[in-house]
Image (cartoon, rainbow, N blue to C red):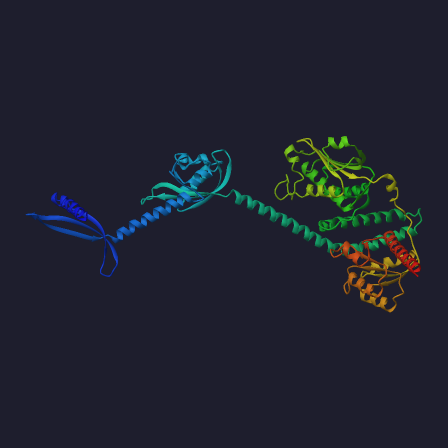
Length: 595
């Protein structure tokens, strides 16, 4: 078999030689040093006589060429795999925008089944916005290298996405433009993530601003309350000394009214710093809260807005500062909707909601019964149905960038729900908006028990009064002595503690300020508790984040909020002393029964 193959090969060989055709062959050869080289040889016949032939063979080394060919094959394969498997949409188009070739990712990105469907399309058909066409063409023609352009693109199904276009011109040696090459990266998710990050940063910025306001408010409140306390206290004492017919009463009553408004203003400033803290709910005359808030609103709203009010009476278990915040948010939103010109109406009335009325207003989270209805209406631009469905979503806002955080109505809804109430909204584009707030109303019998009592209770007990502000000490001492108490004043916590240690049975009650330079009210209270565990203590403060409900329950103290007047001081002192006396009597009774 091998002889036959050799004979066939020889015949083929001489076939070329007989026709004077060069015989070319490629072979791998081993050099003397062992290296493998590629060669190409060509045989040519010189003469042939009597069955013998003279042949010349030319051989050349083609190793480098073979290596280059293999590298090209590898490079082409690598480029083809990159082109086919890339996640970016790679393309080539003519100078006039006709698509020459695209990869599968490009076809998928634009909603086609295969790259062939995209070829010969006009690339401008994929642009959702043609307003920048001339600008983009100019940028591409002037480009000396790759350029990056962000665009809005349209898929084959009409949907749009945001993409980064990376494109560069390809020119011949003479600088003539042959075509454009490049790729498109879908950055829709990245853009959404960037927008969400910006929103989060804005929320953080808003939170930091609120925190800064709260910190500033706390510092202001401490000093401001110390100023207000003697103004309120001395004014009340002077009014008590004057006859009803005195011409001085009118002016002093105005001073007292202004001082109470300043006190309420401090409370509202502090509200910004108390957003996350526990709020106290107690029976509150809502009409009074609304009237106070409207007084502040009149100063903050433009005079071009007419404020109409019809405020009735009604009591609910609520946090006054939060109800104030609800009204402020609703009214400032109304002013914005009216573009600072129109009619703002505020009404407070008593209602009894039936199941039918709740159903008509699509209110499902409260039960039928007695409620207070707070209505805030405006003559502004109104809202369409789509906007109405989202107004309570956190961080949703219809205001321009930088004009609203989107927190106002979400906060309103949260406060109302925490009070066991509900919110109903009516609005139409161009016809204004009405917000109805429903708060559970306390019945009339309970309301009658929370009416004002002008009688100031007094006593004869011994009181240690501690505060680092001299005017507060003077006012508090004089007010308590007028009420019959025996008062020992002190402007220093350390000195006051020495008095307690030297005469532990000398006092029936201790009133101490929270913020003092040498020894804080908390430290002073802890030391007193070690000496006199049963001593009743009133801790006075205007604002402090360190004062929490759990903290003063732990120390068994009562809070007296600054600034206070003579009446508030009298009621707080009498309440603590009476409670302490009842506790002592109960303890004595238990001891007798045990014995």
